[in-house]
Length: 92
Image (cartoon, rainbow, N blue to C red):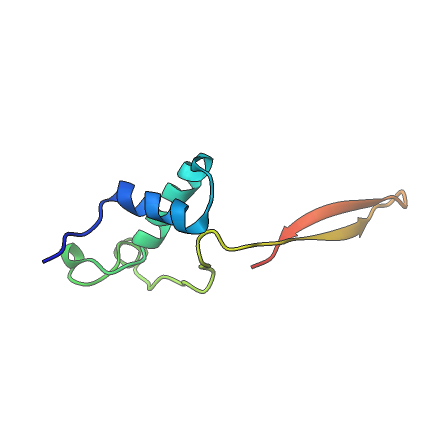
């Protein structure tokens, strides 16, 4: 029976597959734990840690492939003085 990879192995694989530098280690850990908390576990009788805490199923519609290309959409806002400012807005 193959063994499950530990957290360090998972993070190393995520960084390698996405071709991101090691400086993204912290973001990778945060993303891994976020997803991990939305997966069923035997210790909670097949429910997720998220579901056990919040008493509802997690919404996973916001999840994207780790390391995928993302874009920032900048919108212009008019100010009272007539000047325009730029505000960035993240898009999935």
